[in-house]
Image 1: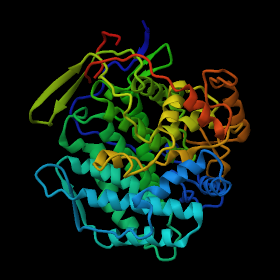
Image 2: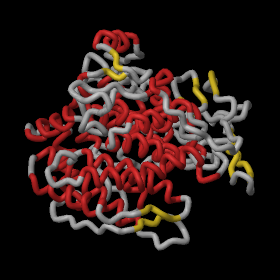
Image 3: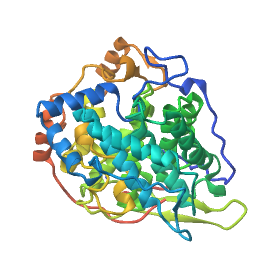
Image 4: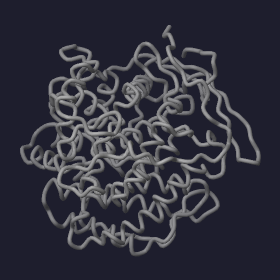
Length: 485
């Protein structure tokens, strides 16, 4: 039986509106060569170093990059003949004429064409991406619908920013107009959600709602060079009252190195979504000199390990939890869960390569379950490869191509401007990084860490991928009692 060694005593659920303070200490350091208020560009999910690495590896036919690139070129969204279908108003949610699938399909087409351009240099793909993005910035006036409009703002806002970041220097791209559209229709909506939570009790909305909107606020802030906006997202990750703040998303730690993922008692799909969104948030911050991956003793890694082991069919501990829900001044209630939900080990989302490569390649840390599930998912595809519904478009994907990297001796050899992100959001020196790496938990040379041999280790991962037993149940806010699954 696994012993619980720490817990979040209670999630804040008073129902009061929650402010998000912008704190200067959380703002990223400017990359070398940029102005005092500017960020490194490109600098969301992909830096210039990342893009150059992809191009060189694919040109050389190196594994597993070539397989990852083949997934990209086979996707119907990555073709230069894609035609945009922009809408003045996008609707997501019941009671509205939903048309948001047009938006997410076009965003993924823009992203995939832009990524393909950076790998091959074929200008037709850059032109297609720009045409799609310009069409939407010239047309879109609002994102509406039920409460689901906040999911649309969060998910498609961070994705839009990432697609546009890849072509921001293209001569035909309407940068200022896109920045205005992104800020007005996505960033502002996501910011409002994190402050007011749609006038609901703060714990009413599950972890992934906060995370989607945090990702949008951060991505919009970087794309628009708004340091205060980035600081708000970073502060919410560390200190927010909602369920997406890292200690609320992973409220219980166990002495086997696992951290219970709050939504594991809800269902597998939403738990995977949350892990993917947290990885996205951490990667975008890392590329601007802010280390959320390592925050609170790498708490995210503990949660990702938990979800990976559980999703592979392994048994995981579980502490019963209750969350409050309802509207402020209106109806209210609570929901309690006592065990992790059942899983389908065949369920795959393209979220693992980014996380596995950060912890094992950049940091030299052990991430056994994450590397196993990353191998199972490889080579990762993207939007359009995981079903026709919106869940198949929640991540931009293509992590095998984009995030496979060689091991580095320090924590930040591939960050923007050569800076090494630190847990406080300041920029650490290379010597500090080397010291931190040396003291970090490491499994170098151990057989249970399958990611210690460089970029070719995906073959080793696949060979060692295993599926064991299974846990069942349902989920929700921490209670003092505990029950292991």
